[in-house]
Image (cartoon, rainbow, N blue to C red; front, side, top):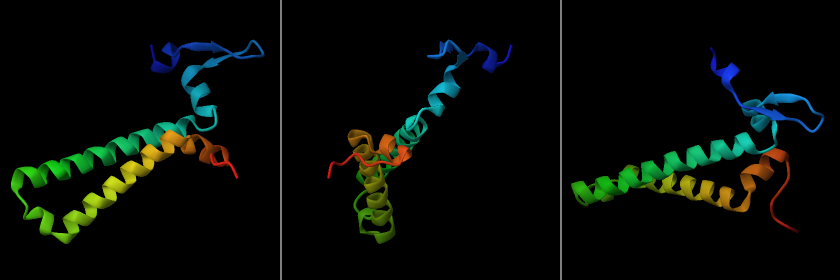
Length: 102
């Protein structure tokens, strides 16, 4: 039995059934939100690993400009992802709109 055959079924408003993964991915912003969540978590873990390595190995790593630059960039990407998730920007950017009022 394949995984596609085991997917939960959801009734559509027109009484049609379709599988849940396809339904979720077809909604605007759902796949973008999953992507932003995943990449934000990865960049957060990279930042935490860099900070932990500096604390474990000593301050000589904090003097390496390339190491500091990579740490700052990964932290910035993590914060950017958190900001997008908090404002609904990942959902709105996939739909072509903006979450900010003008």
